[in-house]
Image (cartoon, rainbow, N blue to C red; front, top):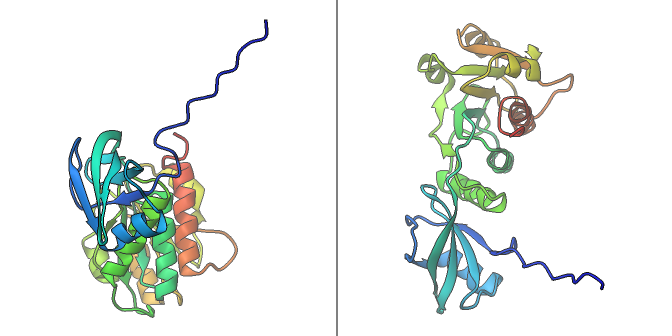
Amino acid sequence: MPATHHPRTPAWPPKSAPRLFVPDKLAESVEIRLEGNHAHYLAKVMRAAEGDPVILCDNATGEWLAAVSATGKRDVVLTVERQLRRREAAPDITLVVALLKKDRFDMMLEKATELGAARIQPVLTRRCVADRLNRERAMATITEAAEQCARTALPDLAEPVKLDALLKDWLADRALFFADENGGDPAAAAFAASPGPAALLVGPEGGFDDAERAAVRSHPQAHPISLGPRVLRGETAAIAALAVWMSVAGDWNK
């Protein structure tokens, strides 16, 4: 008698369910009312109807399954059902990156979030084209990237600091890998040789000037590294360095 093949039970919630970060702390049976962009996205873009699943994160407790309980002209009400995952523990890596032009900095923020950076520290150097950070815009970029790549924790975004102040207050227990266009140890080898809490320092479009380079290289925690034989843009260098660190010392092998 031929074997009977039963259809597989589809995964729930489906991978296509919308994902959103919300400011409210989540727990079972909590009711969440969304307005503004979130409500528009669910009601108008995703055409969410009563009973549809939505995955919520609060950047504190983790990821939760919720269901649409009501939709109005300006809001959508969700009821939290159960927890799906606890908040992830991101690898202990800080990306210290010079402020770049808006579009390039946005790209760096997006990709750093996708790659798993725990913290992003903007730094001001003498050759920075930009001199201020639009925090609201930056956090929107980070949040959208975290929603897209299914992170349960948002990277911490620090306020910009000047390079000399950064070096003065640097923690003694955190290696500072310095992406120096003048050369250094191959990045992968340097990361493997110095496991533990780390940071990646990447300069602006015009690079570091001689005095800045000398100040970084003289810091006891600094490790100059090379990212290969080609000259990389600031955002490319940051993304490349973070990807290599994740593959050697981060969570890509877990």
